[in-house]
Length: 386
Ligand SMILES: C[S@@+](CC[C@H](N)C(=O)[O-])C[C@H]1O[C@@H](n2cnc3c(N)ncnc32)[C@H](O)[C@@H]1O
Image 1 (cartoon, rainbow, N blue to C red):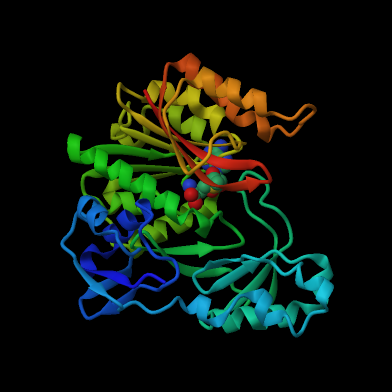
Image 2 (cartoon, rainbow, N blue to C red):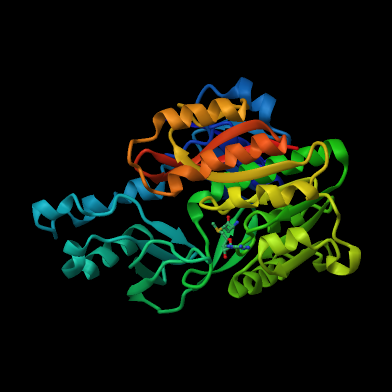
C-alpha cells in the first residue's frame, strides 16, 4: 500500500482534493485526516513530480500519516452477510450502495427481501453514522428523475445534509434528484469553469437542469461568477434556495428559476434585464434529453461559450477522457457500434445530439466518460465550444 501524504491548509483542502482527483493521485485505500488547521490527503507513491505541476496551493509531502480506509477495514457488505445468507443468495448482495449525508440507499434483489433487516444492520456496521437505510423500489423516472424509496431501517425522514465540493447541501432523497456518484464530475466541471475565469476575469454561467445545486452552488461561491439556475421541480428549487443560504452565498449573484429550460432560454427579459443575452458557460445535465435543448442554447452563446452537454452512448473509446473530434466521425463510430434492432431511444440520444452539434457549428473540445449507465452504455460529458 502507498504511504505518501500531502498536507495543505484546510482553507485550500477542497481545491487540493479536486486537483488530486482530477490527476488520479488520491489514494482510495486510505482516508484523509484533519490535523489542526491542516488536512492530510493520501496520495499515490512516486507522485512528487506530478504534484508539483498540479497543485496550486502550498503543500508539504510527508510519509505514513493517513490511515487505511475505514470502509476497507470494516469489510464489505457481502463479507459481513456471508454467515447470515444461504450460499446461493450471497451473490445477490449489492456490491455498491449510495450514501447521501446520513442516508444509505440500496437496490436489493427481491430474493433478499426476507433478509432486509440483516442487510440494514450490516450497512450500519460499515457506516455507523447513518440515520436511515432506504431500499430503491423503482428506477429514476419522470421529469424530476426521482425513484420510489421504501424505509428499511431508521427514521423515515428523506432530508439529509451532504457535503460535496466544499459545500453543504440539503438533499431530499425522495423528492429531488441527487446522485453522490457524480461527485468527481461535478468537481471536474466546476474546476474547468473556474479555470476559464482566470483568463476572462468574470463569467456568466447557466445551469439549465440544476437540481439542488451541486454545480451552481460551488460555482457561485466564486465571486467572479454570476449564476443562473433553472429546474422544473419546485422541491429542487426550494432546496437550492436553502443551499445558497447554507453556504453563505450572496443571493444577488444566484438567479434561480422554477421553469422549463427551453422557456428560460427563450426569455431574454428575465431578472429585470439582468440576465445576459449570452452566457460564458452552459451546463446541460439531463442525459436522456439534453440534446433536444442544444438548438435553443445557440442564441444564448457567443464565440467561445462552453457547453457541458451530458448524454448517453455506447462505449466508444477506452479510458476516461478523449480529445475533441469531428461530430460526424463520432456519429459514424456510434452507428457502427449500435446493435441491430436496438429500439431503446436512449441509444439515439448521443447520435441525434451530434447531428445538432454539427448543424449548429459547435466544436467538441473534450469528451469525458462520467459513469456507467447500463451494460455497454455510459453517461458522457461532451464539452462543446460555440
Ligand atoms: C439528472 S438531474 C441533474 C440535477 C443536477 N444538475 C445534478 O447534477 O445533481 C436533472 C434535473 O433536471 C430537471 N428537469 C427535467 N426536465 C427539465 C426541464 N425541461 N427544464 C428544467 N429542468 C428540468 C429535473 O427536475 C432534475 O432536477
